[in-house]
Image 1 (spheres, one colour):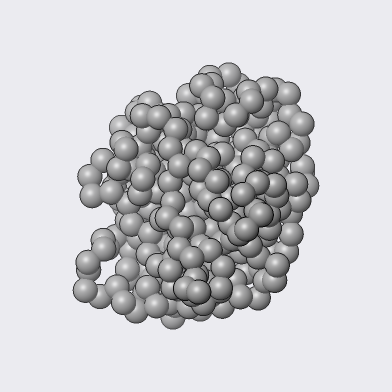
Image 2 (image 1 turned 120 degrees about the vertical axis):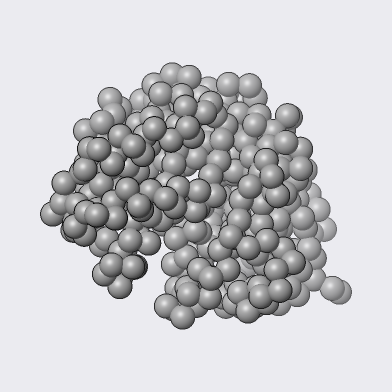
Length: 370
Protein backbone atom coordinates (compact mmCIF):
# COMPACT_ATOMS: atom_id res chain seq x y z
CA UNK A 1 0.00 0.00 0.00
CA UNK A 2 1.09 3.55 -0.66
CA UNK A 3 -0.88 5.16 2.12
CA UNK A 4 -4.10 4.38 3.93
CA UNK A 5 -6.88 4.45 1.38
CA UNK A 6 -4.50 4.39 -1.57
CA UNK A 7 -4.32 0.68 -2.34
CA UNK A 8 -6.01 1.45 -5.65
CA UNK A 9 -6.81 4.43 -7.81
CA UNK A 10 -4.43 6.98 -9.29
CA UNK A 11 -1.62 8.56 -7.28
CA UNK A 12 0.95 11.20 -8.07
CA UNK A 13 4.28 9.40 -8.50
CA UNK A 14 7.64 11.08 -9.02
CA UNK A 15 10.25 9.29 -11.10
CA UNK A 16 13.97 10.00 -11.38
CA UNK A 17 16.49 8.91 -13.96
CA UNK A 18 20.24 9.44 -14.23
CA UNK A 19 21.29 7.79 -17.47
CA UNK A 20 24.51 6.46 -18.94
CA UNK A 21 25.12 9.78 -20.69
CA UNK A 22 25.99 11.14 -17.20
CA UNK A 23 24.49 14.56 -17.90
CA UNK A 24 22.25 14.89 -14.85
CA UNK A 25 19.06 13.85 -13.05
CA UNK A 26 15.71 13.98 -14.84
CA UNK A 27 12.62 14.07 -12.61
CA UNK A 28 8.97 13.90 -13.60
CA UNK A 29 5.53 13.49 -12.05
CA UNK A 30 2.92 11.07 -13.41
CA UNK A 31 -0.65 10.48 -12.24
CA UNK A 32 -1.13 6.73 -12.58
CA UNK A 33 -2.68 3.69 -10.95
CA UNK A 34 0.12 1.53 -12.34
CA UNK A 35 -2.02 0.57 -15.30
CA UNK A 36 -3.50 3.72 -16.84
CA UNK A 37 -1.64 7.00 -17.23
CA UNK A 38 -4.14 9.68 -16.28
CA UNK A 39 -1.96 12.79 -16.49
CA UNK A 40 1.55 14.17 -16.56
CA UNK A 41 2.76 16.69 -14.02
CA UNK A 42 5.73 18.88 -13.27
CA UNK A 43 9.21 18.03 -14.52
CA UNK A 44 12.68 19.09 -13.45
CA UNK A 45 16.33 18.63 -14.25
CA UNK A 46 19.45 18.82 -12.11
CA UNK A 47 22.61 18.89 -14.23
CA UNK A 48 25.88 17.33 -13.14
CA UNK A 49 28.82 19.71 -13.15
CA UNK A 50 31.93 18.67 -15.11
CA UNK A 51 33.57 17.74 -11.80
CA UNK A 52 30.59 15.60 -10.76
CA UNK A 53 30.49 13.91 -14.16
CA UNK A 54 34.17 13.05 -13.76
CA UNK A 55 33.46 11.39 -10.39
CA UNK A 56 30.68 9.29 -11.93
CA UNK A 57 32.72 8.44 -15.01
CA UNK A 58 35.51 7.17 -12.77
CA UNK A 59 33.00 4.87 -11.04
CA UNK A 60 31.70 3.27 -14.25
CA UNK A 61 32.30 -0.46 -14.43
CA UNK A 62 32.62 -0.90 -10.67
CA UNK A 63 30.61 -3.36 -8.62
CA UNK A 64 29.22 -3.26 -5.06
CA UNK A 65 31.99 -3.60 -2.53
CA UNK A 66 34.52 -1.53 -4.44
CA UNK A 67 36.27 0.50 -1.77
CA UNK A 68 36.26 3.78 -3.70
CA UNK A 69 32.55 4.20 -4.45
CA UNK A 70 31.64 6.28 -1.40
CA UNK A 71 32.14 9.63 -3.10
CA UNK A 72 30.12 8.61 -6.16
CA UNK A 73 27.29 7.21 -4.03
CA UNK A 74 27.11 10.35 -1.91
CA UNK A 75 26.99 12.40 -5.11
CA UNK A 76 24.20 10.33 -6.69
CA UNK A 77 22.06 10.44 -3.57
CA UNK A 78 22.63 14.14 -2.87
CA UNK A 79 21.91 15.14 -6.48
CA UNK A 80 18.68 13.15 -6.50
CA UNK A 81 17.54 14.55 -3.16
CA UNK A 82 18.24 18.06 -4.43
CA UNK A 83 16.28 17.40 -7.62
CA UNK A 84 13.33 15.62 -6.00
CA UNK A 85 12.66 17.71 -2.93
CA UNK A 86 11.59 20.60 -5.19
CA UNK A 87 8.36 18.75 -5.97
CA UNK A 88 5.17 18.82 -3.90
CA UNK A 89 2.21 16.47 -3.71
CA UNK A 90 4.40 13.41 -4.17
CA UNK A 91 2.94 10.14 -2.87
CA UNK A 92 5.66 7.74 -4.01
CA UNK A 93 9.07 8.01 -5.71
CA UNK A 94 10.67 5.75 -8.30
CA UNK A 95 14.48 5.99 -7.98
CA UNK A 96 16.46 4.24 -10.68
CA UNK A 97 19.94 5.07 -9.37
CA UNK A 98 23.06 5.34 -11.50
CA UNK A 99 23.97 2.27 -13.53
CA UNK A 100 27.66 1.54 -13.15
CA UNK A 101 27.86 -2.02 -14.47
CA UNK A 102 25.51 -4.43 -16.20
CA UNK A 103 26.41 -8.09 -16.74
CA UNK A 104 23.12 -10.00 -16.38
CA UNK A 105 24.56 -13.40 -17.29
CA UNK A 106 27.59 -12.89 -15.06
CA UNK A 107 27.94 -10.65 -12.03
CA UNK A 108 24.45 -9.15 -12.31
CA UNK A 109 23.58 -5.47 -12.47
CA UNK A 110 24.67 -2.51 -10.36
CA UNK A 111 22.69 0.70 -9.91
CA UNK A 112 24.43 2.99 -7.40
CA UNK A 113 22.29 4.68 -4.74
CA UNK A 114 20.35 3.63 -1.65
CA UNK A 115 16.62 4.27 -1.78
CA UNK A 116 16.31 4.23 2.00
CA UNK A 117 18.48 7.36 2.15
CA UNK A 118 16.11 9.13 -0.22
CA UNK A 119 13.04 7.91 1.66
CA UNK A 120 14.34 9.47 4.88
CA UNK A 121 15.27 12.73 3.16
CA UNK A 122 12.03 13.07 1.19
CA UNK A 123 9.58 11.63 3.72
CA UNK A 124 7.74 9.40 1.22
CA UNK A 125 8.07 5.75 0.11
CA UNK A 126 10.83 5.18 -2.43
CA UNK A 127 10.91 2.25 -4.85
CA UNK A 128 14.40 1.37 -6.06
CA UNK A 129 16.66 -1.50 -7.19
CA UNK A 130 14.25 -2.20 -10.03
CA UNK A 131 16.49 -4.59 -11.98
CA UNK A 132 17.94 -7.12 -9.56
CA UNK A 133 14.90 -9.38 -9.18
CA UNK A 134 14.59 -9.75 -12.95
CA UNK A 135 18.28 -10.66 -13.28
CA UNK A 136 18.07 -13.13 -10.40
CA UNK A 137 15.23 -14.89 -12.21
CA UNK A 138 17.23 -15.19 -15.44
CA UNK A 139 16.23 -11.96 -17.18
CA UNK A 140 18.42 -9.30 -18.73
CA UNK A 141 17.23 -6.70 -16.22
CA UNK A 142 16.78 -4.26 -19.10
CA UNK A 143 15.10 -2.49 -20.68
CA UNK A 144 12.42 -1.63 -18.09
CA UNK A 145 10.59 1.25 -19.78
CA UNK A 146 8.50 -1.04 -22.09
CA UNK A 147 5.64 -1.46 -19.61
CA UNK A 148 5.38 2.33 -19.53
CA UNK A 149 5.57 2.47 -23.33
CA UNK A 150 2.64 0.03 -23.47
CA UNK A 151 0.62 2.35 -21.23
CA UNK A 152 1.52 5.28 -23.49
CA UNK A 153 0.34 3.40 -26.57
CA UNK A 154 -2.98 2.74 -24.80
CA UNK A 155 -3.24 6.42 -23.83
CA UNK A 156 -2.62 7.39 -27.46
CA UNK A 157 -5.40 5.06 -28.61
CA UNK A 158 -3.06 3.24 -30.99
CA UNK A 159 -4.61 0.38 -32.94
CA UNK A 160 -1.65 -0.85 -34.98
CA UNK A 161 1.87 -1.94 -33.97
CA UNK A 162 4.23 0.89 -33.17
CA UNK A 163 7.64 1.21 -31.58
CA UNK A 164 9.47 3.49 -29.18
CA UNK A 165 13.20 4.05 -29.65
CA UNK A 166 15.21 5.55 -26.82
CA UNK A 167 18.54 6.95 -27.97
CA UNK A 168 20.47 7.64 -24.79
CA UNK A 169 23.96 6.37 -24.07
CA UNK A 170 22.72 3.00 -25.32
CA UNK A 171 19.79 2.59 -27.71
CA UNK A 172 16.78 0.48 -26.84
CA UNK A 173 13.68 -0.43 -28.78
CA UNK A 174 10.17 -1.33 -27.62
CA UNK A 175 7.81 -2.91 -30.16
CA UNK A 176 4.17 -2.81 -29.05
CA UNK A 177 0.97 -4.51 -30.16
CA UNK A 178 -1.53 -2.07 -28.60
CA UNK A 179 -4.59 -4.26 -29.10
CA UNK A 180 -3.40 -6.58 -26.32
CA UNK A 181 -4.97 -6.08 -22.91
CA UNK A 182 -1.91 -6.21 -20.65
CA UNK A 183 1.80 -5.59 -21.19
CA UNK A 184 2.77 -9.01 -19.82
CA UNK A 185 0.43 -10.78 -22.26
CA UNK A 186 2.22 -12.94 -24.83
CA UNK A 187 2.81 -10.95 -28.02
CA UNK A 188 2.15 -7.55 -26.43
CA UNK A 189 5.78 -6.43 -26.22
CA UNK A 190 9.22 -7.11 -27.58
CA UNK A 191 12.04 -4.99 -26.17
CA UNK A 192 15.83 -5.01 -26.26
CA UNK A 193 18.93 -2.85 -26.56
CA UNK A 194 19.72 -1.99 -30.17
CA UNK A 195 23.38 -1.16 -29.59
CA UNK A 196 25.48 1.86 -28.68
CA UNK A 197 23.89 5.24 -29.35
CA UNK A 198 25.17 8.52 -27.91
CA UNK A 199 27.79 7.18 -25.47
CA UNK A 200 30.60 6.61 -28.02
CA UNK A 201 29.85 9.94 -29.73
CA UNK A 202 29.94 11.75 -26.40
CA UNK A 203 33.15 10.00 -25.36
CA UNK A 204 34.86 10.95 -28.60
CA UNK A 205 33.68 14.56 -28.40
CA UNK A 206 34.94 14.79 -24.82
CA UNK A 207 38.35 13.34 -25.63
CA UNK A 208 38.98 15.18 -28.90
CA UNK A 209 37.06 18.44 -28.53
CA UNK A 210 36.60 18.85 -24.78
CA UNK A 211 32.81 19.17 -25.10
CA UNK A 212 30.06 16.88 -23.88
CA UNK A 213 28.33 16.00 -27.17
CA UNK A 214 27.92 16.83 -30.86
CA UNK A 215 25.37 19.62 -30.50
CA UNK A 216 22.70 19.46 -33.22
CA UNK A 217 24.87 16.97 -35.11
CA UNK A 218 26.91 19.88 -36.49
CA UNK A 219 30.21 18.00 -36.59
CA UNK A 220 28.69 14.81 -38.01
CA UNK A 221 27.10 16.90 -40.76
CA UNK A 222 30.56 17.97 -41.90
CA UNK A 223 31.88 14.42 -42.15
CA UNK A 224 31.33 11.24 -44.12
CA UNK A 225 30.63 7.73 -42.84
CA UNK A 226 33.60 5.40 -43.24
CA UNK A 227 31.94 2.34 -44.75
CA UNK A 228 34.75 -0.03 -43.83
CA UNK A 229 34.51 0.87 -40.17
CA UNK A 230 30.72 0.58 -40.32
CA UNK A 231 30.93 -2.92 -41.81
CA UNK A 232 33.38 -4.05 -39.12
CA UNK A 233 31.05 -2.66 -36.46
CA UNK A 234 28.09 -4.60 -37.88
CA UNK A 235 30.13 -7.82 -37.74
CA UNK A 236 29.73 -7.78 -33.95
CA UNK A 237 27.95 -11.00 -32.83
CA UNK A 238 25.52 -8.95 -30.72
CA UNK A 239 23.53 -7.95 -33.80
CA UNK A 240 22.89 -11.59 -34.73
CA UNK A 241 21.79 -12.51 -31.21
CA UNK A 242 18.04 -12.95 -30.84
CA UNK A 243 16.25 -10.64 -28.39
CA UNK A 244 15.57 -10.00 -25.61
CA UNK A 245 19.13 -8.81 -25.03
CA UNK A 246 20.85 -5.94 -23.27
CA UNK A 247 24.14 -4.10 -23.17
CA UNK A 248 26.46 -2.40 -20.73
CA UNK A 249 27.38 1.17 -21.65
CA UNK A 250 31.01 0.20 -22.36
CA UNK A 251 30.38 -3.12 -24.08
CA UNK A 252 31.19 -1.59 -27.48
CA UNK A 253 34.06 0.55 -26.17
CA UNK A 254 36.41 -0.83 -28.81
CA UNK A 255 34.31 0.75 -31.56
CA UNK A 256 36.25 3.96 -30.90
CA UNK A 257 39.33 2.16 -32.21
CA UNK A 258 37.51 1.73 -35.52
CA UNK A 259 37.46 5.50 -35.99
CA UNK A 260 40.78 6.31 -34.31
CA UNK A 261 42.52 7.22 -37.57
CA UNK A 262 39.68 9.35 -38.91
CA UNK A 263 39.43 13.12 -38.79
CA UNK A 264 37.05 14.39 -36.12
CA UNK A 265 34.10 15.07 -38.43
CA UNK A 266 34.38 11.72 -40.21
CA UNK A 267 34.80 9.91 -36.90
CA UNK A 268 31.65 11.46 -35.43
CA UNK A 269 29.68 10.90 -38.65
CA UNK A 270 30.75 7.25 -38.60
CA UNK A 271 29.76 6.75 -34.95
CA UNK A 272 26.41 8.37 -35.69
CA UNK A 273 25.98 6.07 -38.67
CA UNK A 274 26.83 3.08 -36.47
CA UNK A 275 24.08 4.01 -34.00
CA UNK A 276 21.54 4.33 -36.83
CA UNK A 277 22.68 1.08 -38.47
CA UNK A 278 22.26 -0.73 -35.15
CA UNK A 279 18.62 0.42 -35.07
CA UNK A 280 18.10 -0.83 -38.62
CA UNK A 281 19.46 -4.24 -37.61
CA UNK A 282 17.18 -4.24 -34.58
CA UNK A 283 14.04 -3.54 -36.58
CA UNK A 284 14.51 -6.85 -38.38
CA UNK A 285 13.64 -8.63 -35.13
CA UNK A 286 10.20 -6.99 -34.84
CA UNK A 287 7.31 -9.49 -35.17
CA UNK A 288 5.60 -7.07 -37.55
CA UNK A 289 6.79 -3.82 -39.09
CA UNK A 290 5.71 -0.94 -36.86
CA UNK A 291 3.55 1.74 -38.41
CA UNK A 292 5.51 4.41 -36.59
CA UNK A 293 8.78 4.78 -34.69
CA UNK A 294 8.68 7.35 -31.89
CA UNK A 295 12.12 8.51 -30.78
CA UNK A 296 13.03 9.78 -27.32
CA UNK A 297 16.33 10.51 -25.57
CA UNK A 298 19.08 12.87 -26.67
CA UNK A 299 19.48 11.24 -30.08
CA UNK A 300 16.17 12.64 -31.30
CA UNK A 301 17.75 16.13 -31.14
CA UNK A 302 20.50 15.11 -33.55
CA UNK A 303 19.23 15.97 -37.07
CA UNK A 304 21.90 13.79 -38.68
CA UNK A 305 20.89 10.76 -36.59
CA UNK A 306 17.20 11.31 -37.37
CA UNK A 307 17.88 11.78 -41.09
CA UNK A 308 19.84 8.53 -41.18
CA UNK A 309 16.97 6.68 -39.48
CA UNK A 310 14.37 8.12 -41.85
CA UNK A 311 16.48 7.20 -44.87
CA UNK A 312 16.97 3.62 -43.68
CA UNK A 313 13.52 2.72 -42.33
CA UNK A 314 10.21 2.16 -44.13
CA UNK A 315 8.03 3.51 -41.30
CA UNK A 316 7.31 7.03 -40.10
CA UNK A 317 10.10 8.24 -37.78
CA UNK A 318 9.12 11.04 -35.39
CA UNK A 319 10.34 12.50 -32.13
CA UNK A 320 7.87 11.68 -29.35
CA UNK A 321 6.92 15.34 -29.20
CA UNK A 322 4.88 14.65 -32.36
CA UNK A 323 2.36 12.83 -30.13
CA UNK A 324 2.53 15.34 -27.28
CA UNK A 325 5.15 13.59 -25.12
CA UNK A 326 8.32 14.95 -23.53
CA UNK A 327 11.27 13.07 -24.95
CA UNK A 328 13.63 14.35 -22.29
CA UNK A 329 11.48 13.00 -19.47
CA UNK A 330 10.12 9.70 -20.74
CA UNK A 331 12.49 7.53 -18.71
CA UNK A 332 11.91 9.48 -15.51
CA UNK A 333 8.17 9.19 -16.13
CA UNK A 334 8.62 5.47 -16.72
CA UNK A 335 10.10 4.94 -13.27
CA UNK A 336 7.28 6.94 -11.69
CA UNK A 337 4.82 4.58 -13.37
CA UNK A 338 6.86 1.50 -12.47
CA UNK A 339 7.06 2.58 -8.82
CA UNK A 340 3.28 2.38 -8.55
CA UNK A 341 3.28 -1.00 -10.28
CA UNK A 342 5.81 -2.31 -7.76
CA UNK A 343 3.84 -0.92 -4.82
CA UNK A 344 0.73 -2.69 -6.09
CA UNK A 345 2.39 -5.99 -6.94
CA UNK A 346 2.02 -5.61 -10.70
CA UNK A 347 4.65 -7.00 -13.10
CA UNK A 348 7.40 -4.69 -14.31
CA UNK A 349 9.04 -7.07 -16.79
CA UNK A 350 8.15 -10.23 -18.69
CA UNK A 351 9.64 -12.74 -21.16
CA UNK A 352 9.11 -10.38 -24.11
CA UNK A 353 10.96 -7.47 -22.53
CA UNK A 354 13.89 -8.97 -20.62
CA UNK A 355 13.77 -12.70 -21.34
CA UNK A 356 12.87 -13.47 -17.74
CA UNK A 357 11.13 -16.85 -17.37
CA UNK A 358 7.81 -15.34 -16.25
CA UNK A 359 6.37 -11.91 -15.51
CA UNK A 360 8.01 -10.46 -12.40
CA UNK A 361 7.46 -7.43 -10.19
CA UNK A 362 10.89 -6.12 -9.26
CA UNK A 363 11.95 -3.33 -6.96
CA UNK A 364 12.54 -2.71 -3.27
CA UNK A 365 10.29 -0.36 -1.30
CA UNK A 366 11.87 1.79 1.41
CA UNK A 367 9.64 3.83 3.69
CA UNK A 368 10.72 6.69 5.93
CA UNK A 369 10.99 5.90 9.61
CA UNK A 370 7.95 7.10 11.55
